Image 1 (cartoon, rainbow, N blue to C red):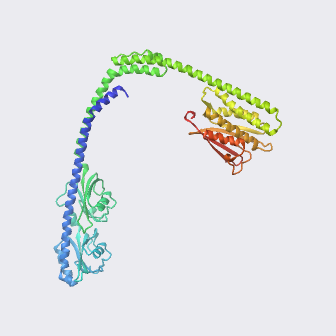
Image 2: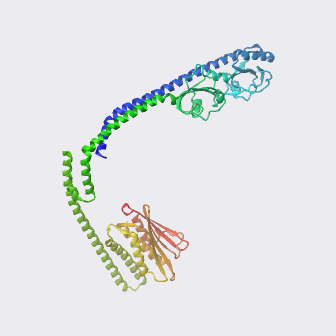
Image 3: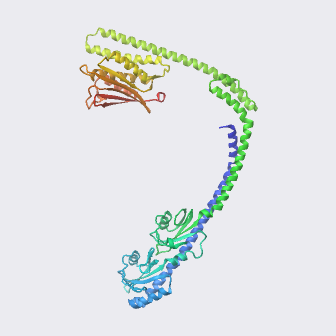
Length: 565
């Protein structure tokens, strides 16, 4: 990081506490305003729920009073119809009243010509019969009136305590919608009264377009129905565009009604947001100007001398130690002091590099000489095996001497490659295989008989891995010559290698006779296959036998170390 930039950062870090204090203050101000709006929404929702509590209580008292009408007690349908009609005319909020038998049949109604309808399947009626208490319905539309309403039911018990009748009234939801805005709600507010099923029973504003709609897919409504009381921020299409502060409160039992009220946050917080971002902008501008002044000062007083020193460092990185020793800096006493020590360092590095270059050259020369001598010694041993073989009469013993000689020659070729290559730590394994296959073609193959084809991609192996890998390939090719082509058969042996991610894949395939289906290299009794298995374990490599339509393939997967990738 540039020194000028560091100075700027120091100034910014020194100013950071002030910036953070201002930022935290602004965030708290915004948060407090949000909390205040949520609390207001919660208070308003509770007030609306309380007003609806009074409606529920008034309906309960009206039902109780109706239950004591003599015409209802006497089950005089004609007089009962007249009395209920009088009540609904006096209470315009009601769309209908009725009295039902315990089996759900209406025997007394306020609407002419609507008797006899059975309501036994209604959930609110069944709940009244089960509980013996007052119950309310979700939003419904009357069959005769076509108006939206909420039904209240109350049981009438006889002398024995059994339910003899159920008195019923339907309350207009249009009235409920108007009452939601009494007293007048804040601008932009929305309030809805919902049943347990999520259907809007009353809403303000715009009740005509929303009453009767099911909002149970809204996350806000789901939480309101389940929790009955609470508050949250959120977005809801049914409330309007932007974010709202929602609060919900229950209308007291026995109802399943919930009040959901929303106050617009987006518009309300606009002024707070404007103040917040204006203060952030001013604070950022002041700190940016301070940082810019620091960078200009650093450029004039520190940057130029540092660049002079940096140019010498770059030259030193490229190996130009002379430039590093001639560095000259015009600047402060501290920078001149640094330049003097830099010159001394450059001189010392030049001396050390010269020593290291000589040491590396000497090491490589020694390693190549060792590999050359090892190769000569192995070839001498192979020649001695050849001389000894000439005196052996037993064909099997002569064959064993031949195989041992080939193994020794394989190792000798690796050492020859090591002192011929420039890199003494690794071997170009693909080039080695190509030479190895050419020599085997000359030594073991013959025109019109068995040929060896080498298919390789560029790859390298460390010296401690290349000898076991080469011996495995030698054994697999030898086995192919010995066992895959009986009776002077012609054929082709294919040798390949290719790197793939973190492994080197080596393959030896022939088109001779196939192996038995249960062949297992690890269980083989032959010396060659035992050697192959042991060498694979030494390399931590996997050995796989693949039966081809003609012949078979041996696939060796050698894990590559980083230096050989």
